[in-house]
Image (cartoon, rainbow, N blue to C red; front, side, top):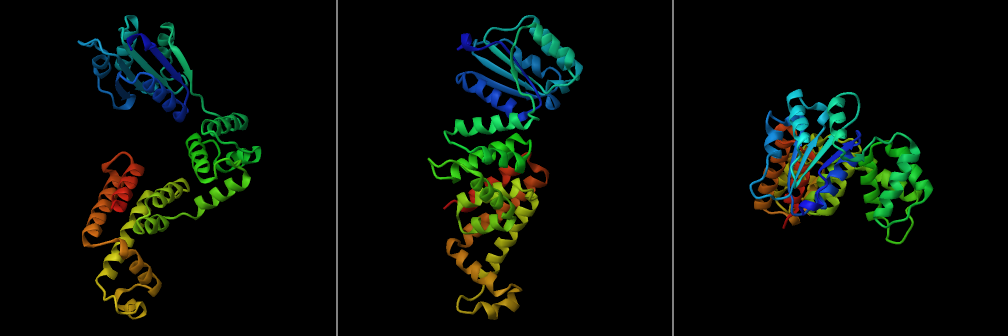
Length: 315
């Protein structure tokens, strides 16, 4: 495995999706290597030197340092010193987002003859079109030129959104069919119409896959994660209210006392078939945790919401 490691890799460019993919491919190619990933803004003095220190066991290691243009001078010097005498069995992967900042370190890295991987942002429509076609080819799907242009027009230059849309279209459109402009239009309509309450309805119906897809669409169309937790919490409160009311009482008669419209009571009664006091209590806790995470206790609000939905829909 030591012989399989390249030594030094320099990823250049501001496109995070391409940089992340390059890093993932490097790690995948060395499955037995120990991996350490560092981000410039979070590294303490000495951390890079410690990560690159010789191993007592001579095991293969991959050390990734992201966004090296933001490294403090002392941390840049730690990398520069390592480049003078690199260790066997270590693959040092450095990502520089481009520009003048950090150029002195990049020049030193290039003198060490690294493998260079471009990750430049795609600004031209032709580049984006090539990217979209490559994504569909990777998924073994065919796409029309009109569909490619429609994706560029609707999603612009965000490669993560374009990649996500390709994956979703490949999953939604029947295998073997060419993905055309109509499929893209249908996908876009679904994105626009999805709200936090669509996510909540699918979750309370215990339709996990539908809830996660609705969540993805809601976030992609700009719905604030806080609004989604709010919708989940409000829907659970409605279930709790309706669960305490007599089943034999008509929804119209309950509307005034519960301060809910009859249709909402009827819907809650249908959803209550999937719930009991224990699972409702667990859902309250899951949504409260997600709300706390989104408001600052965790770094990834999307993951927090997905975790809450998966927890709510587990039976």
